[in-house]
Length: 427
Image (tube, rainbow, N blue to C red; front, side):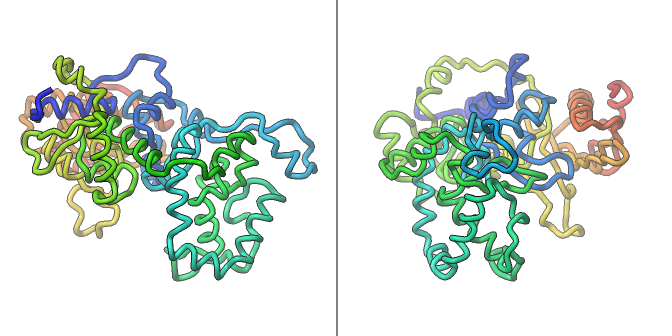
């Protein structure tokens, strides 16, 4: 492959690697999507749908969310309700999904959790954490004793004077700070969520003994582990920059740079100049045969995307590859919002064509399209053809949400086209 990568090929590779060039074969599972992306970022905002379900919908369409939720739960051997925790929480099957601080709070494959021991060790060494834990050693011991005696617990299950919100640490109570430290260092883990509240747990109450022992082991090469997750991130993205690599698991470009250099020297990653990019790009060696063959079929997929979908989460790359300047406006004061509170990017046949401000009105069972915008370059003919495909996707989204209607508000330059398409696409 030449060291220069055209914008067209870079875009095609990005879409293909992320599974957004075409809809996959029927029967593709939510866990298969996670395997492709390596990470699903968790988020609590539920205006339309929580963001960790969205990347799966964007790729395979409507699916049973319980497939992911249940995959994050351990199953236990039969025991009586009054049995001690050592018997009651004897793991029969450990979860397929685990939660960890990767790209913020994220779902990953449980089998991948040991790869992040280097991050757990970094959390141990963080000065503010050490100081807090030293000052609150009794609280930490009490929390671990509660988990040992009672099994998995949400924050509100801990009855303690220090489990009250304060003005520090994002309003977290001291108990919450301590639990998050223990979670970040791997001393405790999670056993799924209840009403989106994390269920903190001891590793031995979630994992098989040999796996819990592996997580606790310090017999590993931290640089090798970090280099490994960086390599996986580069492959998953298709083509990316240092900033994109760092953003994939919340590190600064300066922190990932030496590992990327090592991967280049080992022939695992190729540095490229991408047409129109001001900074070097990086492509995993596994993609070279496809690039050299020019083996990219025309993109056919149409879907709404999560605000945190890897296609758009690096704002600079979305601009450079797709001429799409995207910013979620949740934290923008309402008078200053341009497009809406929770706008979702719209992908259509390999182009990012606009954004929709969606809300699931669960009481009225209606999907509200509160504002709809297309990009200024779209002709009327393109608007019309795209609107029909987008409306089909919205119908699928509404059914997925258990809604029985779609209401398109007149706000936005794409609203008329969507309303016209709605007449031809029935829910």
